[in-house]
Length: 245
Ligand code: MN
Image 1 (tube, protein in one colour):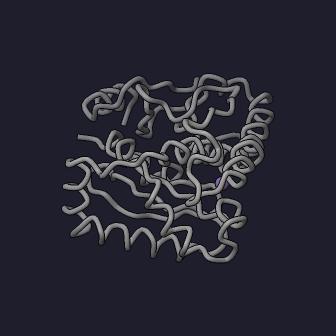
Image 2: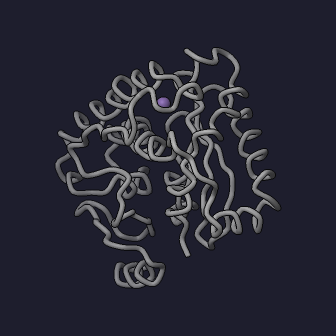
Image 3: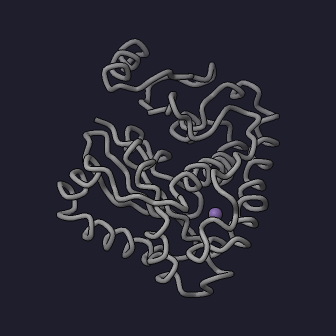
């Protein structure tokens, strides 16, 4: 696909502004959230939480949230920024684009984008997936869950089972595939589905961090309890707002 076809197809797919790094070839479709971006442009900064650290207690405790945000997330940002300083040609490139072009990046940058770029992006999305004042899933989202999982409860069961199945550190995702269907996926470490070329057209709707740092202070080894508590603080309005028509 040439650049023109790419842009036409992207426009047809409802994708907004695309920022293509000068060093990157625009041959892989990538959905950049132009209206409500998950992250800004380099140098990246820690996004403020949309609620106080204690707001999600007792489901997620204040100390976990504070350390997770100010230490873990901040650490990914600092390491990502310092690596990008040596590669100014990517200063205006969307992180989503770096993910999909990962295998063609300078060798030194690849693992940084995968680990720390993923860490920044995944956590920026994760904070927004949570809320101290949850409301039921909007109708359009419930209908999509019923269509693709049989019921909202079946989706939650599949998501929780996937969360339990992650060995070591990783994430569980509700993604909307390019053709519109919803699916549950898991990724190791700080990877996310946007990093896999076959999935570049997918959209991340909901993400759950199942690294031990996300729950160990409160739940220790009881990941299943953390997964159960998660449903008490999911921001369904945010998730539904990311659904593609
Ligand atoms: Mn984390």
